[in-house]
Image (cartoon, rainbow, N blue to C red; front, side):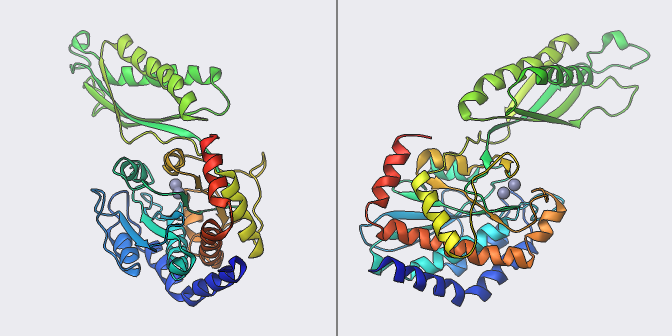
Length: 387
Ligand SMILES: [Zn+2]
Ligand SMILES: [Zn+2]
């Protein structure tokens, strides 16, 4: 099978489905659902792929397999969860529709090309770690490469993906009347504030690539009641999963210091699996870049002035199998992800164009993996040699 001819055909297969893909993108956009509650989106995508949602112990995950040859097995990843208050401010409707398009189009050529394809619906990227859970439950076993595209403000080979740990932090003190018997009280708000301030002091002495941010969720009821219970949420991020570990210890020491000073007890619970950094597979992203450029959409390497710093559970996938997570432009570069403004761009004409181009560029990259001599081995070798 001629690779270049196959790439022309797969683009036609995407174009043939353009109406469906854009309808799916807009319907998901108009019906935003939070982590693990993506019933509407998962059902819509799964039924378009001829399957049903509900696999790997997750109601809103899905998997659609095609092909029976002994060529490489390629996974195309869909995300479809939204954010509280701002809907699709991360543009996952674009990821979902582009993944669907790549999957449907490449599937039409799978038998002929002798390759296998899996479209994976991965819920709860925004703080649920759907891909981590699916990975633990075997979703990536036997996969030779995994691809997805993420919308953003520029076409980039990858975002700067940094590792993250997320914690719910609770302080337990002793309640008292703040005027009548303050000496009986142990103030859980003081503990939380002192912990916060200790972290603020720590920030001067951490790497420029580290990020620490916390918010207070429960901080007391009334000034004349000494708060006996407070709750904060903290995110700790660092360049890699390796550099994250010592940073976590230092942040934890700060939060515990607040508890010690105020005579309170502290409990720290992870709210989600830790996300790792992303190991972009170089030979694979080179193919994606060439395919995207052929569509008139050149892809740049991230630079100091043109980058996106994020965390994603696709990082964890990249530790399991060779992976790429390029960014595809839907907005001007100065529009930030996770804003209401970005949500509008995700359903704009540019967003629609990214759905079609993203589907084509991924489907063409699937064909490269199936048909380009030596590429699958090159991709495997690059994975083995680490980042
Ligand atoms: Zn996001
Ligand atoms: Zn996202």
